[in-house]
Image 1: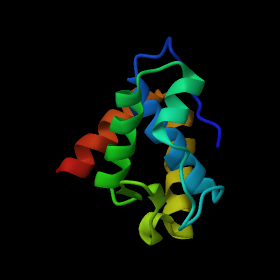
Image 2: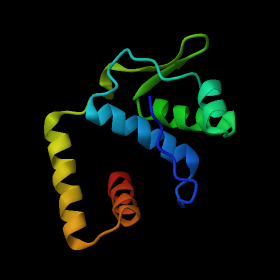
Image 3: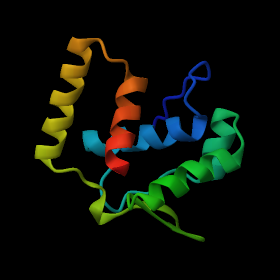
Image 4: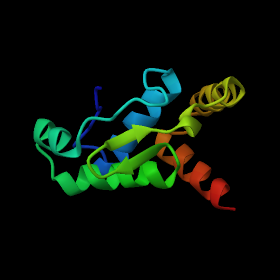
Length: 117
């Protein structure tokens, strides 16, 4: 699994890690039952703190995307797949945001606000 990180980004590293996993799920690269790499391995490979990786994994657990078990690691849950209709809606939303010149940070903030409402 390839994690995409941008240290110069204003987005916290744990959010970037979680977003990478979400992207892999959306693309179908990760499927139910797949294991994420051990947190210690990811931390070592990316030269980041293990707690940063664990925070990302915990956020994914809180979203219902992965199951965390001691000794078993992080495993993608059955509810992690996104419906084709939702993926199409997201694709359309991103295309419209780009057309209007809305940046990813702004779009993300609007989505978070709307989701919390």
